Length: 88
Image (tube, rainbow, N blue to C red):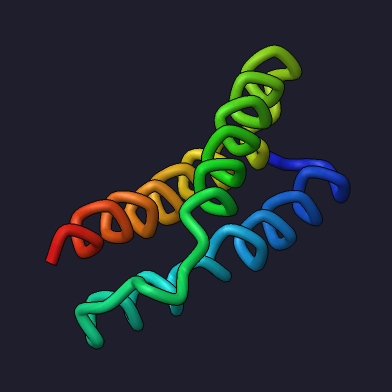
């Protein structure tokens, strides 16, 4: 299956944008602290990723669906860690 140049760029851009959340998640896990993380920011990122994912489904764009799914998981993990570690 061949993909067009725009989809290839979307795959690379999505990877960079979505994986940018991984270092924060790893830092929270390592430090066992999410005190300096904004829960509102990550809630907004998760909401935006959900909407972008739905947009990708409507447009039938694999790159949008894939990387916004990844973004939802990573930003969601940070948000869950923020909420769980807050009670400690």
